[in-house]
Image 1 (tube, rainbow, N blue to C red):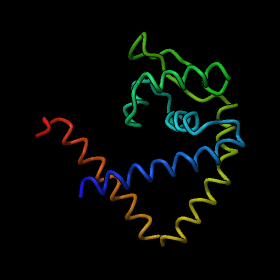
Image 2: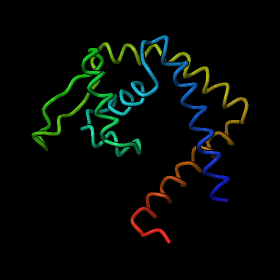
Image 3: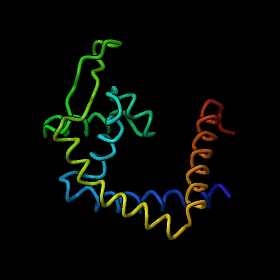
Image 4: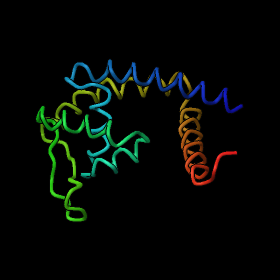
Length: 144
């Protein structure tokens, strides 16, 4: 069951990345840029916090964050909680780029809800969230 689940998630991840690239391209973003900007749209976060929330390495987030800052799509702010770990937030240009993705994102969400049905779509999200929580809980324990 684990192999089947993992393979399904890997396939789903690949499809989401491909679709995300298509949605982000007209806005001048990549899927990775969109992902990092999306992580800080509600509140500025340090690179390590972004990496934790997305389940990826700090180094990969740092590389994307630096590119976003160089392109004027994000900026670093002082972090009152940690002098060296600056906070990242989108600039107005970054927010505008993300807003250009919204119509395509909304259309895809509506199409998926129609294809799956609203309740099945919501249950899928809940199941994936439970799976993430379970894996996080197991992370603290040594693997057999």
